[in-house]
Length: 279
Length: 279
Image (cartoon, chains in turn blue, orange):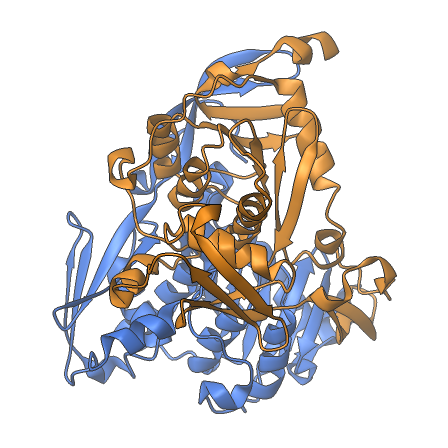
C-alpha cells in the first residue's frame, strides 16, 4: 500500500503517477510527506472523424484501449475492419478509421454506451439479447493452476502496490500470464488486453482472463464477446453476471483468495486433480 | 467475506441479493454449496418523457438514485425544480418531471454523460471548467473523529460483508452517520445520498462524505457540487481528484486504515487534538 514515505519512482511508469504532498496523520504524529498518486488521463476516441467518447483512463496503451473499447462496444468486428489508427498522446486523442462507415446513428451509439454505476455498455439481461454465441471450447484448467496464476497476477502490479489506485487484468493460458494491463478503470484494463490481442492477432479462445475487479454483466459480455472460456477474479460477481455466464458457456470463478475459490458456472472446465495432489 | 456456507438471509435486504449454487474449491475439497450474490438491476430514468439513461444499480432507493443522478449531472438545480417523480419498481423506471424543460439537446446530454472506465460524467480538468464555486465552509474535524466514523462506516454494511459486491457511502457530521447507502456502483451510492438530501431538504454543507471507493475527478466534482467540505475514503485518489479538490476547497482524505490517514488537500480542516490525547 501507499506508505506515505518517499517512493522510489525509478521502477514505476513515470507518466502514470504523480508526486503529491500529503499530511500524514497517525496516532502519534502529523507530518508532511511525499506520496504518489495514480494519474487520470482523458482520452478522446474519434471514430471516422466523429468524436465518440472521452474515457478517463491511465495513460498507457492508448491505441489498445481505443481498439478494445470499440470492439467491446460492437463498433469493430475484427482487425480487418481497421483502416488506420493514429494516436496523439499530447492531445489525448486516438483517431480510428474503419473500412466501412460504422457511425451511422450517433445517438443510438451514445444511448447504447451509457450505463454508469461504475460500468458502461447496454444492460443485457439474457444471453439472447447479447447476440453472442455460446462458448463451447473444451479448455480445462486445474484448481492449482488458477491459484498459481492469481498469485502471480496479484504480485505483478507495482503500480497498484504503490498507489492502490488501479485495477489490473491479464490474459493467460493455463501456465502463465501472456498480457498484463492496469488502468484506473476495470473496464479499461480488460479493453486494453483485447485491443492488444486484436492488433497483434493474438487468439483468445483458449485463454483465461484474470481481473482484480468485481464481475458485473458488462464484464461477462466483454469477455464472452472474445470467446474467452474462463474468467477469474479475486472479487465477487453479481447475479446477472452469473446468469449470463451460465447461458453464454463461460466458466466464472470468483473469490480466489489463498487456497480457495468459488466456481459459479461451468465448473466442468475446472478439475481438482493437482489441487488434491498438493494438499 | 462470502463464506460459501449457507447464509442467513433474514437480516439482508432480500431484493438486493440472490442465492446461487457454487462449486467451492479448497486445498482439501470440492463441494457444492449455496452462496449469495448481489443483485444487479437496470434502472431507466425518464426525464420529462424522454429516456435519458439506464443505470445498473442495486435495487433500493431508486427515487433517490434518479434525483441524485440528475443533480450530479447538472440537470436538476434543486428541489424546487422537481414537479413529479414516479417510481415503477416492477418495470425499473423512474419518471422525473421538472418545472422547466431541461431536455433541450439530448445528444449534448448524452455526450456529456459518457465517460466510462469505471466512471461517468464529463472530464473536467480544472476547477474553472466545472463552473463550481470554491467551498469556504470553516468546518473542523479531528483525526480521531474521522477514524471513528470510518470504523463505524466499515462495520455498517451487512450487504458488503455477505457479498463483497457493493460500494458504500455515507453522509455524516463529525459525530455520527446520518445517511448510509450501498450500491454495486460507487457513483450510485453517492448519488443516492444526495438524492435523499435533495428530496428531504437535508443540508450537506456542514457534512462529511465517506466512501468505500477510489476517488476520481468525477467523485470530487459530485461532492463539491453539493458543497460538502470533507470527503473521506479508505481508498486512493487520482492526481486529478487531488488537483480539483485543492482548487475547489475540498478536504480530501484517503487511505484511512487503522489509525492512519492521508490528508491530500485543505488539511486546515483537520486537527490532531483528540488523536494526540488518545495515543
